Length: 107
Length: 494
Image: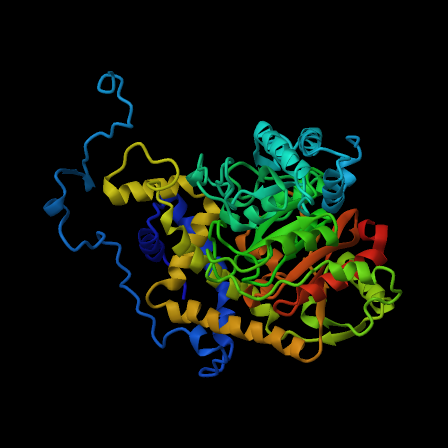
C-alpha cells in the first residue's frame, strides 16, 4: 500500500496543512519509509472475536465515520442568512471597544 | 546553605530544611536560578529552560515563608524548586509545547498535577524545552532549538522531555515534570543518568497536559534519586474529577516501605524479578548488557528470585505505537489553527486558507509528518488495515504483561534504551529515531507503571535500567528500585 503524491495532497487537505511542491517528494518518501515498517502488523493473528475487555470498554461494532471530505464546513443555514455582512467567508462584526482606536476611544 | 551544596540536596532534604527554618524558600529559589545561570541553562548554551520569571518565583517564595511560619507543619515539598515541561499548563509562565503555533500562549488555568505539587509547597521555577508537542526522542524537534545533555554537551539529552531531564541532571532542580507517550521520561532519564518514573495510566490526572495521544499520555517525574521520584508521584497521584480517565483507586504510600526496609540485609526476599528475553537482543550494546547483568546480580544478592520470561509481542510495539499515537495526534492537534491559539497569518485566502497557512507555518517537520501519518491511517480504505489492526495488536501487548504478572512475576527488569545518548544531529531517518523507544513504548501501550534508574556508565555515558510493574503496583516497582539504588551506591554512576 504505497503512498502516492495524490495521497499526500489528499491527506494534507483533510488535515488542513499546506504542503509545498518542494516538500511533497520528501513527504511521500518519508511516509512510505515509515509505513513499510507497519506492514508487519498485517501478518499478526489477533484472534478476531476474542475481546476480553469489559463490555463498557469495548468499541462499538462499527464506528460511525464521516466521509473523507475537505469541503466547506457544513452548516444548518447558509452563512448569509444570519450574518449581517461577510467577506471571504468571514463574518464582519463591529469593532469592539476593547480594540483600542485612539480616535474613537478618546473621551 | 552554600551554592556548592544546592545541587547535592534532594527534594526531601530541601523541604526538611525549609520546614525547620534552616533555609528560607527564597534562598532556595535564588540558588536554583544561580545554578541555572552557572551551568548555562539559557537558549544560547544548554537550552534547558524556555521560560522563567525569577521575581515571580521569589514572590511566591515569600508568600510560602509566611504560610510556613504560621502553620503547624509545612508541606512535604516546602520550598522545593520544580521545573515543568512546556506542554504542561502553569499559571504565569507560557505553555507553548516548544511550538511556534503556541507562541506567547499563557494558560488561564494550571494542570492538576502542578496544583498538587504547589499545595505541598513546591515552587515552579521554569518551563523546560522539549520536542514540539512531545513528538520526538531527542529534544531536537523544538522550535527553539535542541537541548544539550549536561553529561556530554555534544549529545542529545533524549526526548521528548529532554529539558526537564537536563534540568535535574545539571542540578538546577531536584524534581522536574515531564510527560510520557512512548517513553519520553524514561528514555531521557537513562540518557542523562537520573531517575524517571511513569505511573499507571489513570494514576495521575492529565488535566492541563496538552494532549498528544490521549490514550498513551502520562504526566511523569524526573528526580536524582528513587525516593524523590516516589515522593513526586505520590503527591500528584489520585483521582481528579477534571480527567475522566483518572482512576479512583486509593493511593498507597510509595515511600513508607523504604524506611522499614533500608536496614534489612536482603530486602527483596520473596520478590520475583522477570527478565524478558525480547529486551536483550543479540545486537544490544555490549556496555548496556554488561551493566544490566551487574544490576541483576545485585538483585539476586538482595534476595530476589530472577527468572527469564517472555513478552512475545514486544517487537510489534513500535509499528503499533507509531500508528495509534499519530492517529490520536492528528485529531488532538486539529484545534491548533491560529484562531483560538497562537499567531495568525497576516493574509490568507478565506477561512480554509487561513487554517492551512497558520498550521503550515506553525507546525515543524516532525509534527507535520505525524499529523499526515495519523490522518492517513484514519482515512477511508486504510482505517481497518492500520488503525484497527494496531488497536488489536495493542491488546496482545497488554496481555503479554498481564500474563507474566499473573504468573508470579512482581517486577520486570530490562534496559531502558538500546543505546546510550547519541550525538546531536546524528539520526536523520524518522524511523531510526522511533526505534529509540523500542524498550519503553510497550509500557505506554499497556498502561503499566515503569521507571528508569541509573545503573552504570558505558564509555562515560549513563546507562539506564528499566523496572516495570503491574497496573497500580507502583509500590513494588519503587521497592525494587530503592533496594537496587542502595546496593549500587556510587557504582550507579560509573
